Image (cartoon, rainbow, N blue to C red):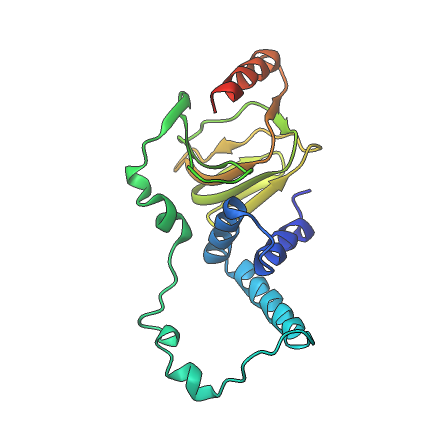
Length: 208
């Protein structure tokens, strides 16, 4: 599931305005942190713009190049790209984290959306028990890195998993990691403590 096609679909949906608030924040942060993703996003925007120009029901205004040059929004000194995460959450060092278990903390965004947007912080070497998901899971690395059975992920890398993916994320032993995450449905745990953790997750869902 965690391949180029599904990542490009996220970028395309963002460029076309098809995402809700939570995934829009995640996608825009991905584009801001990942140069390759940003390049692909620009290609999609150009494609969509061409389609818009060819739409018979829309009469776009014809601009001269001077309209763009004289526009204050085009001035690179005043049009600095803002970090979507800092714009929404503020300084991450001031986040009031909620500890889920030792070394694993999270902060849930207050956002009106069916998707739940979270910041996750894992201390160095901390792991999450082997699990899968009832729906898609999006994990974007903001700081540090983590690894699992499928590879290692650094700042600007995104992992998109589905119900078929079982993994055991482990934070970097040197730096830990901070990630932006969306989990469409509850986590499903496996292994020795799977039944207990699934019961805990079920009970916790009543207090969201």
